[in-house]
Image 1 (cartoon, each protein chain N blue to C red):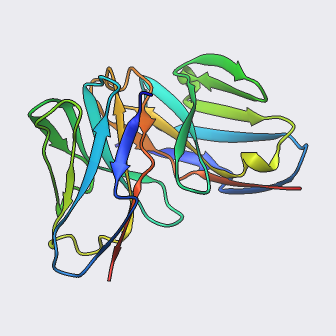
Image 2 (cartoon, each protein chain N blue to C red):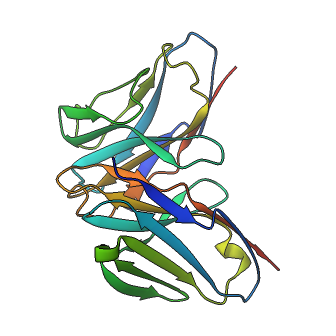
Length: 113
Length: 109
């Protein structure tokens, strides 16, 4: 079945550690996105990529990094520079930017201990 | 930047009731989507509706782009409709979406 997978579902991290969240899609979509959601809040854009080997900062990129080496994959690294990383992280993709429906993965819940 | 506001922020209904959720946006957009976030956090597409009216079962949506708002109608609500409803607008000429703050719906049996 076509879709977006994220792993792991739950992730626990000690302060000072970098962690990488995985996002894979088999929808043949060009554009991929990472969002952060805090409890009771909406979604905020971290990074997005329109095409392989290209990505742009969203509204809250500080303390995060991404890569886009393959069309199917858009991993997110939460670095130790991110001051408050505990949150729910959602990956999304679509085929033609904002002229298309956006689809979401199931999310990763990151907790910093 | 574009502001996206949703109302009401919270809504409690008895099963079988109807409701209307509203999404206002502050500038022209080229896309508007409605999503339902279930209790496990998964976001499900409901409608891609930059303008006009669409219906899908008990749900329907209307976007009036010239007046910068969209409405989501839920009829004969069921407990499985509970969750958070988000609208998201696409910014013309970019690949960026802006999400509203959501409407939290609880349907009581």
